[in-house]
Structure formats: C-alpha cells, structure tokens
Image (cartoon, rainbow, N blue to C red; front, side):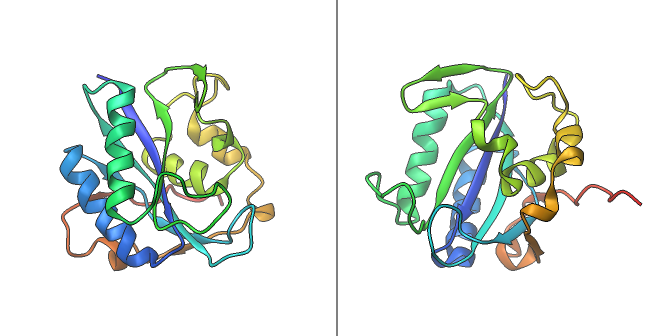
Length: 179
C-alpha cells in the first residue's frame, strides 16, 4: 500500500479553506497526518500570502482515484478546475509523492518536480516524512531539507491549532533544528 504525500495550500480565506480541506481529507483518507502550517509569499504572481502544509496517508486507491478525490476536495473549497495557473487559490492540492512511483505523462510528473525547489513543500514534508527517500534524488527528505537554502525562501510557521483545533488530526511536531 503506497504512502502518499500531498501539498496543501490556500491564499483565499486560508484558515477556513484549509480547515475544510483537512476535514475532507481526513474523511477520504483515514489516518491522514498533517505537518505544521506555514505562511509564505505567493510565488509566480502578486497576491495575498499562502498558508501551506503537507498531508500524508496510506491508501489502496490507484493514483488517478487519489487525484480525483483531491480534485473533489478542491471543488468543495471553491476552486474551479479551469482556474488560471498563477492566480489566487481557495485550495491547491498537489501530489508530491505516491510511494516510490516515478512517472512523466501529460499533466502529471512524479515525484513532483518543484518539491525540491519549494520550501513550503519540502519543509513540511520533512516534518512528517524525514526518512522517506526521494525516488529520483536518492536522498532522504530530511537530508534534502537540511541542504535547502532556507534564507532565500522565507516562510513563517503559524499556530496549527488555529486551522485544525476542532478536529482530531494527527499533527506532527517540526523536526529538531540544528544547533
């Protein structure tokens, strides 16, 4: 049964939309684990700050069924399928890793290529899956995060309880920082 990791982000009413998405994801994928939440600047366009995190879960569902489930959660949060790429998002759910699957097909590349470039994907993933080996980089997620230039990509950890306090989610503490 593959372990799936998904980036979750919103810059349109993020507190409301992330809480909604978290509830839906926990229902769709029992045992879902959540990283801490981070605020960072929009990338690729001028807009309100995003709140981002990563969720992880095991599933017997095939990849396409997982993606369909993620699209349904995005729709519940008000995101149309035809939304422009570089624009505000009520909800953005992107598969980062689906087990150790490596694929490149129209509309889908795994592992997600920008995972190694975006701190709001890599950092939260390192919180909940530091020992997972990146299928193409050959290093653990924790090692990749330790090497990442965090100063070039600032993000602010925010209070996770603000987004998920009404639910019983499996939140993971951040990794210990280096001295």
